Length: 228
Ligand code: C5P
Image 1 (cartoon, helix red, strand yellow):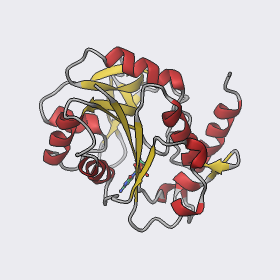
Image 2 (cartoon, helix red, strand yellow):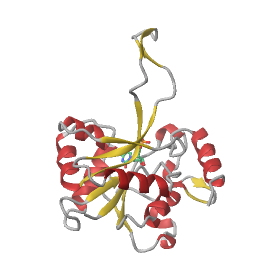
Image 3 (cartoon, rainbow, N blue to C red):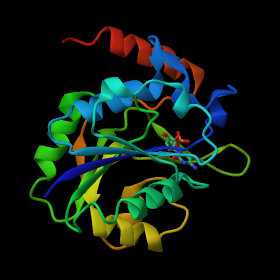
Image 4 (cartoon, helix red, strand yellow):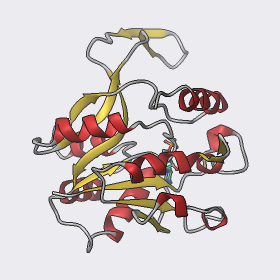
């Protein structure tokens, strides 16, 4: 089976508090998403990288993506939610992929993805039927709150993981799961709703999602201090 990446990049990034969508914010002199796409396009495991953009995207065409090579394919079919954007991408590439091919869905907003993250995910899931996702064990003590922000319970954290991306599933299973799921915030939840059990593959916290302004500084530090 082949491996393809789908990168949802049609969000507005409202929590960043910037006018410009966060995927285009400058990070070490390049748009943030350029870092994300460079790692995916540079991976020998991945055949093509489909980036799902908003139909109202005003930025993509202003930048030069030629350094990323031939694997990169922009699709202007973003939706109202992340899941809609991914599903739009899956529908758009239907004629190009086989039903059992692997799809790696990766957030545009995770620019510190490393080659070893992809290698490990692909290696550990190669013989899985369903697929799985990168994740890290939860480090903090978690509290469930009541309506008045009082602690209702402490949630035991020993079996809790924080979901990251890439999330890697077979094309047809993922498409069917997303077509039947509503209000999911990641692909794994759609698979779970379909009664399937994705595998957790342990990554690390350098693969952070840029959500708030501080994350941009952390991402810059991680990229600058990376070996190799
Ligand atoms: O908002 P959040 O950080 O969870 O978004 C995760 C990823 O999903 C981002 O890369 C964002 O651009 C993308 N997204 C999308 N379409 C939407 C909303 C978010 O492609 N409607």
